Structure formats: C-alpha cells, structure tokens
Amino acid sequence: MTYVVVVARCLLLVVFLVSAFSKLRGRERFTEFVSSVRAFGILPAGAVRPVAALVVLAEAAIVVLVAVPVTAVAGFGLAVGLLLVLTGALAVVVRQRQRVTCRCFGPGSAPVSRRHLVRNGLLIVIALVGAAGALLAPAGALHPAGTTLAIIGGATAALLVVHFDDIVDLFDFRSGGPDRPVRSVGHKPSSR
Image (cartoon, rainbow, N blue to C red; front, side, top):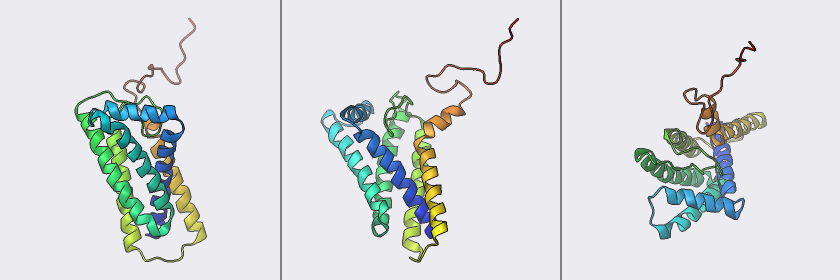
C-alpha cells in the first residue's frame, strides 16, 4: 500500500502544482481565472477575487503538504476538501447549462461539462485512497526501484489529468471536439 501512497502523493503534487502555477504565471492569467470564477455566478461580486486567491493558496498548500511525508495526510485531506467545493461549483454550472470556460489549468477553451465532474471525482478518490494508505499502511523502507516506478506512474497519471480535456477531445467523434471543425482522418479526396 505504501507505493500507492507515493503514486497518489506524486499525482496530486503535480496536478496542483500545474494548476496553481498556471494561475500565478502572470497577472493576466490570474485575472482570467478570477473572471471564470465570476462567470460561475455562484459568489457575490465582492467575494470572487478573495475566493479565487484562496483557491490558489489552497492548491499551493496541497503541493507543499503532499511533498512532505509527515504532512501528506493533511495534504490529502485539504485536496479532498478543495475538490469537493470545486466539484460542487462545477455541478451547479453543469446543472444550469451555463457556458463557462474551465480555467483549472490555465488558458483553455473547454466549457465546464460532466467531464470535469468525472475528472474531479477521480482526483477525490485518489486523495482518499492516498490518505487511507498513509494512515493504515505501516511506515517502512521502500525499495528505490519501486519508489521510482511509483513516482513515474504518479507523474504520468498527473499529466493525463492535466491534459484531460485534450484527451477527451481526441475521442469526441460527434463534433470533432469543441471549437474544432470536423475533418476526416486518413481519407484523401479523389483528384477526379
């Protein structure tokens, strides 16, 4: 179970690092994130910027907490709490069929949809499994090769999460993905 904890720690560290960094990369990026939070229409106008700043602060705290083994359980707990709140906000947007751009990982054009609920649900499960493993598994020496594989697996899975919208769009055969024209793959028009 301890290698599962390493995978979960690495995955959440990379996901929340990318998420926080994408919002703090510059004033424009943070302003775009604030605008997307405002577009959700859930918060009073005066609370939007402070809540957006609190989200980024929580993301950064998760990175630090899951990076250190003795604080990993607190990091998992904070991740679950933040993800539950964010998933609740996403669910409101999906239920109301609003067209709000997802700015979870910086600039993007994907509107909030059920796919984001699925992604967050998976992250919640990973954080819960990581917390359970960290609490229940005896602390012991890990084999360097196993630890390396767990880190690589966690980082790879994190990249899949970060690029989840792009991956889903690759397999969206109905419309060619959002904001993309439909095109035929592997079929050349005849030259007659």
